[in-house]
Image (cartoon, rainbow, N blue to C red):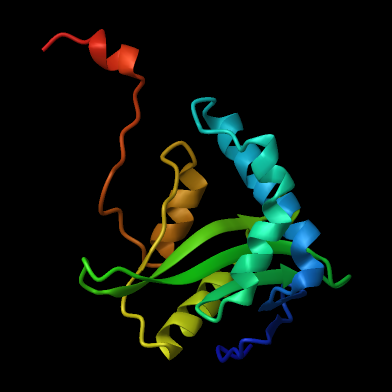
Length: 179
């Protein structure tokens, strides 16, 4: 199995899937997978924010805009039937107030349950890393939910280390606490 990947595709013969750049024809499946990701997160912790019906309705347009920009990629893994079974969004962001100014961000990473434990997320992440490295991006970030231990384990195996923690509380929870 070759470690080299072009942006077009990488065939993983052992897992019987192909990783390729998403196209407009994948938009319905990207939407399906993003909703599934949110459902998984909500199922693990009901405090997780829900996607509004308007956002869900607009997901295909949202992903279409990501596909249009050269500094973005959406990679998908497709099974033998050529239907997407996994996705990962990677974007190059610029912020002149930070160092490095240009950095990568991974979002909306998902593998359908029946396709997990086959190296697909590794393949998607490697595709994203090659995309970023070819553009001389030196740092990439992502978020994962504390209530999703398999995700944290996966990302840490791929080289990501926790750096910051975000906390969430309602105003009433804050006000109910004593010093």
